[in-house]
Amino acid sequence: MAEGTKDEGTRFDAIVVGAGFAGLYMSHRLREAGKTCRVYEAGTDVGGTWYWNRYPGARCDAESLAYSFSFSPALEDEWEWSERYATQPEILRYLGHVADRFDLRRDIRFERRVERAVYDEAACEWTVTTDGGDVARAPVVVMATGCLSVPLVPEIPGLADFEGPKFYTGAWPHEGVDFAGRRVGVIGTGSSAIQAIPVIAAQAAALTVFQRTPNFSVPAHNHALDPDWLADFKKHYREHRRFHRLGLASGFGDLEIEPKEFEPLMNSALEPDDETFDAICEQFWQTGGAIFLRVAQDMMTDEKANARVADFVHRKIRETVKDPETAEALCPRSYPMGTKRLCVDTDYYATFNRENVRLVDLQKSPIDRITATGVRLGGDADEEIELDSLVLATGFDAMTGALSKIDVRGVGGGTLADKWAAGPRAYLGFMVSDFPNLFTITGPGSPSVLSNMVTSIEQHVDLVMDCLAEMEARGARTVAADGEAEEGWVAHVNEAASATLMPKAGSWYLGANVPGKPRVFMPYVAGVGIYRQICEGIVEDGWRGFSFA
Ligand code: N01
Image (cartoon, rainbow, N blue to C red; front, side, top):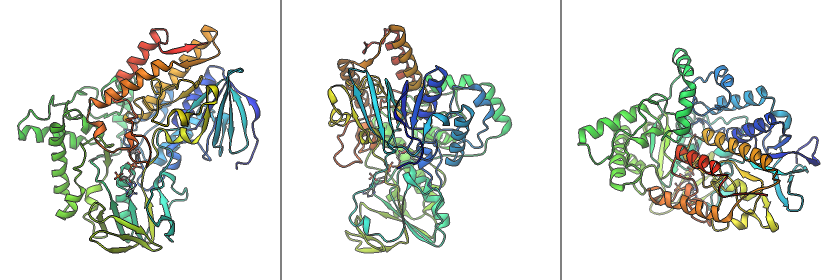
């Protein structure tokens, strides 16, 4: 339980849960509008996902000049990003700077995990309680809880028996970990592992990577930002930001090629002859980053087109990884490329050429159990791998995890957990019917994790402020999503996903990584530009689908 002053029935205009990008910007906008606000944050400082994910090699896979706030040109001007893709410590420093610059810390209570939020229909007010004993009331609650903030503990027999240190990438020790001279095992090969593995391999005596499903990864081609280039870029920042908000790239950036060429280069990956096809793919590969998925218009809709691009990546893996068996095991084949989150790496595949690195293909040799001193493989392997340290890069209960952990009770005392028992339902991913005056920043049903999160966060926070202004203009005390509008939106989100290859992988987008979680494709696939236009249309139509009372 946290020390310090407690809120004891204190009333605010709004309560914000979380002090990452979303919570910070939300509290800034509320403050600017003259509203009182309390932010509760479980960590000891600001940062959200960047506070917790401190594993070696952690950096953002959206470009720093795009993955940063756009609301303040002065902030843009004064902050100097040092690299194309910022490291976790640099992003955390940036968020600390934002908190100080806009004097946001005074509204934040740290080391407070929100446990309950209960709506009182008569008073049109929420009561929020924390594990630090705070009780606070506000007409408005904003959930800025993040999409990837609840690390998963995998169900692997014997996990508790391991006697050496265990580290979760999503909750890494703040003091750092020295792997020098140690025999390290990494379980998982998602984005976190793919960033951590090359760095751990360079430190450890031996590294064993336990891979259940190989992931597609493209090179980051990260580099320091040239000060002259940066100064020139900043002259056109507004134009770039407009592109991030409205472009097809889901706000990711891809600054080295935009805004001049943001259309995919191939209408269909099936059209060009082999030489042209390879040359275009190579151009994208050399550019680096998640833009690779835009190499062809039909990349995410046509399985054959996707397979042709995947084959290019398989060839790249085979060219890089010297041991043919390891190279084959690293080639993803069980799902179309991009239907699991594309990873962006620095030297991931080349790391498997190191003498001290071994890949264990769990498809062939599954983990039988974890023992006190290592990992026992079953199947044909029947082998025990001795380990000193274990790294679990096993992912998150994504998008709904953080919200489901809070006991949220809306109209009639109904809980959010019950409402979402068969999968999340939210209007625009922004409000949930029966939960008036409660906003979900980048909630399920919005582009969120398929976009540059900062672009999407700013749009949702601005929409909250517009919604509060509309309430005031109408003299309303409550706003709520209509059940029918919500049903329609959920159907549209599913339909949009079904028109693509996205549901074809057992991904965390679908909740497939969490045993027992209903399989519903959670993010909205159509991109930030289209989503923004839809939201603007709804507002112009007098907030269609929302009821003010
Ligand atoms: O998690 P993941 P992550 N036995 O869920 C494996 C964002 N992010 O933390 O695929 C063995 O992707 C699991 O295997 P499988 C980004 O959006 C961004 O890496 O389920 N293995 C998988 O390989 C990303 O997508 C950045 O078969 C087990 C891995 O663990 C998201 O966070 C950096 C297992 C989990 O991969 C999540 O990434 C990092 C078991 N029992 C993360 N259980 C950047 O901005 C799970 N696995 C760069």
